[in-house]
Structure formats: structure tokens, C-alpha cells
Image (cartoon, rainbow, N blue to C red; front, side, top):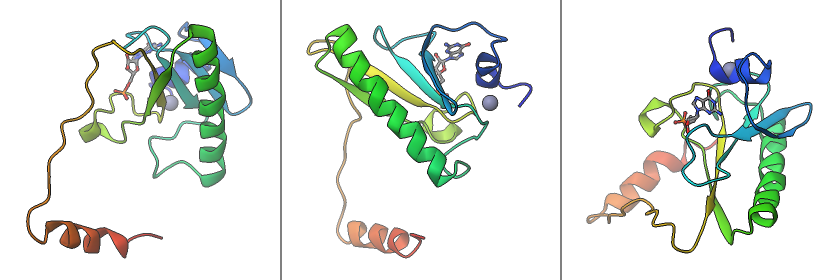
Length: 136
Ligand code: 5GP
Ligand code: ZN
């Protein structure tokens, strides 16, 4: 896609600090890291989100995530990391080219996860019913 920043990074038209590359994926440092080593793993083929990526390609993407996560653990001596895909703008996706964030974590980095709520009477089963029969 000609106006996509990540396609431009893949084509080498915008510089990046590359971490890993194979025929299918490119991984590079996020320009605005949550923690040092924050890495983005992107399929080389432009797809917007989970709905557009093919199953086989998804497998390749997450195999690369696993490989890179391990390298971050060893290379940065971190005890763990978060992986995250912001799927669609409402979920915080700014760049419309699917990517997996790998965010290195340290014991005292002060990052909070999401606040959690609870279901009212009957709401969990109602929600369950709406989703379960849509699984393909
Ligand atoms: P999103 O919110 O779409 O899930 O995340 C997009 C990420 O891309 C952000 O964390 C942002 O810092 C990163 N980003 C945006 N533009 C560039 C860029 O030109 N180069 C790099 N390396 N990262 C970028
Ligand atoms: Zn793209």
C-alpha cells in the first residue's frame, strides 16, 4: 500500500532499527518505545488486521513473535514481555497495517494493565450466547 508507513519501512523507504527479517515478516524497534526494546513484528504483505490475514500467514507471524520474544528475554535480560495487537482503530490501532507489539517488562517498570470490571446478573451468559454461535 503506497501510503502505508509500515509498507514504506518494509521497502526500505523509511529507515528503521531492524531486529529480524525473513521472507514473510519484518521486526523493528518501535520509534516511541513503552520500554527499551519495544519491537513491532509485521507481515510483509499489507493486511489491516486479524480479519484480513490468512491462517498460514498468522502462524508465520506468531512463530516470529515467539522467536523475537526469546531474543529480547536473553538479549535484554528481562524476565518477561507483553504481546499485543491493537485490532482496529477503536482498539488503539493507529497504523492500519497489522502488527504485533512485543513490550519488554521489568519488575518495577510501573506499567499497569487494564482495569477490570464484573458481570451483573445474567450478563455473562447473555454475552456468551452472542459470541459462541458466531465461531466459524
Ligand atoms: P498501533 O497504535 O497502530 O498499534 O501502534 C503503532 C506503533 O507504531 C506505535 O507504537 C508507534 O510508536 C509506532 N510507529 C509509528 N510510526 C513509526 C515509524 O515511522 N517507525 C517506527 N519504528 N515506529 C513507528
Ligand atoms: Zn502496509
